[in-house]
Length: 104
Image 1 (cartoon, rainbow, N blue to C red):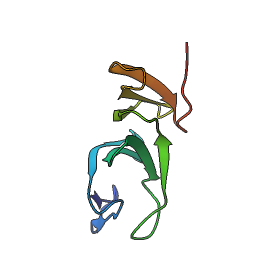
Image 2 (cartoon, rainbow, N blue to C red):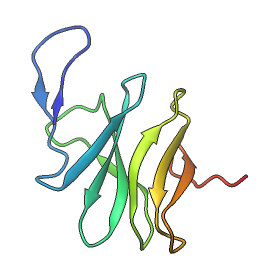
Image 3 (spheres, rainbow, N blue to C red):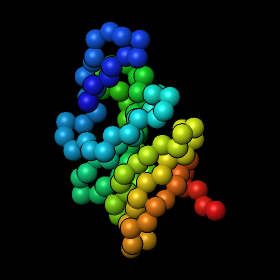
């Protein structure tokens, strides 16, 4: 993955994971990045897009013992929607921007 400044300048490589990074999604403001990283368990991770350094701190945003995939930020960046098999079926789930699940 590469960070490309909106104001111009040279692209810089972002080392998030050596491999296994898929389905990246960036918030509309361009300040947050969510992605899927697959290992034995599929969870959703986040990194601040403006973080400095070759390997900015990454945070596990949404996790379960089942597959959590396909993250998408809401237009205002306050929610993230994703698919999960945590109930035994593939369903759409919603969490706040910090990964806390929201229930109606």
